[in-house]
Structure formats: structure tokens, C-alpha cells
Image 1: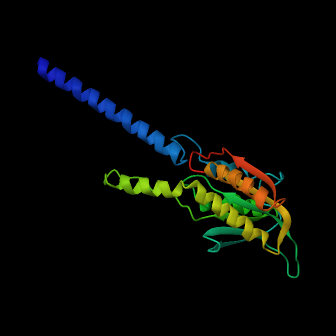
Image 2 (image 1 turned 180 degrees about the vertical axis):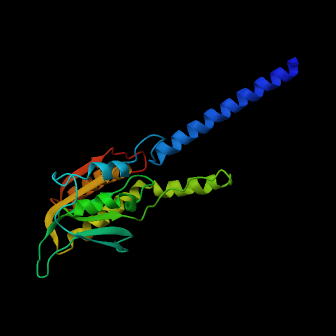
Image 3 (image 1 turned 90 degrees about the vertical axis):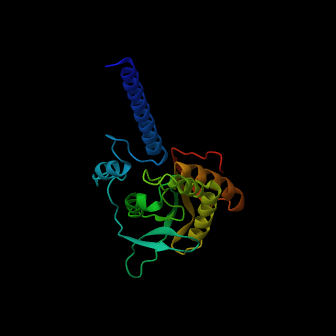
Length: 222
């Protein structure tokens, strides 16, 4: 091989290696940013299904109630899970407002939310902010659409407003036990429920009994 050909081959090898590293880094970033499992990693849904089989523990398995699931459009698009009651029964239940993580709308948590409701909780979850769009390798310009979509889905102030509206909606229901409501959030939703709880402490004292967050994050958008 001539010196020129040898240098050309080495340059091509370095270029290919650099491209491979960049692709791997991009894949890792998108997996972490969008909350998707990495290769060889068990997804949260798989963990939920396998670890929640044992009905002998109150933290696992379905509870004593059947659950009515519905999609509502007021005060905004959301999922509602209500424990079923026998005819003539007028029981009241504690309520839960659930705020999802960035790029992970409520329907991705549906199994867990239904299971929670089966233990005697009325659960409402925002479905207004949806999944994020990933750019297509076949359409380089799709990156601009993805960025715009990400900005909309990561609007923390909007998510806080949704939590406040859902708390008001549930508090007005006859089947919700007064002053027995929890705010629960994952990731971006965790930051949202903390901010919402602070507002409700002033505007609606004693309405919120507890706040539960999983890996809360509020970035710089709240």
C-alpha cells in the first residue's frame, strides 16, 4: 500500500470511529432524556408488571375495588380512575393528582394508576402534555419540529397549572373525602407537584394531606 493510500485508510478509519462514538452518545442522550430503557435495561413497565404480582402485600397487586376508567376533557384532557361502588353505596375516597415525567404522558402510567385506584383512591392524571417527538434520520429538518415539541412538553408552568386545576376539580366531587388529597409526581411531574403544593398551601389550606415525588426535577422552567 502506498503512503498516500495508507494515510487515506487511517483517516477513513478515524472518521468512522468518530461517527460511531457520536452515534452512541446521541443514542445514550436520547434514551436518558426521553426516559426510555437502555439496551439490556428493564423498563419501568416490566418492573411494575413483574414486581406487583403478589396480592398478599398492600403495596403489590390489585386492591378490593373494580375501577372505572375514563378520559375527561374538562378542566383539560386527563385520565380519571374511580373505584366502583355497589348500588346505593355512597362512600367517599381520598384523591390523588398524578403528574407525569417529561415526554411520558399519563397513559404510559395507566396500569399503575389503575392499580392505585383499586385500593380505594380517586386518581386524576394530566394527559394534556404528550410524548416528545424524536427526529427522523431520514429527514434532517425534523429536528426543528422535535425541538419545538420538546419546548411545549417541558413547559413546567403549564404542568403546575394543570395540577392546580385537577386539585380543584377533584375537591368539588361529592365522592372525594374533604381535605384528604395527595399530589404525586414523577421526574418533571415531581417538581410540578412540589410547586403546586406550595401554592395550594396558601390558597387552599389543609386541602393537600401529602406530597409524594419520585426523582423530582424542575429544571429552570418553573
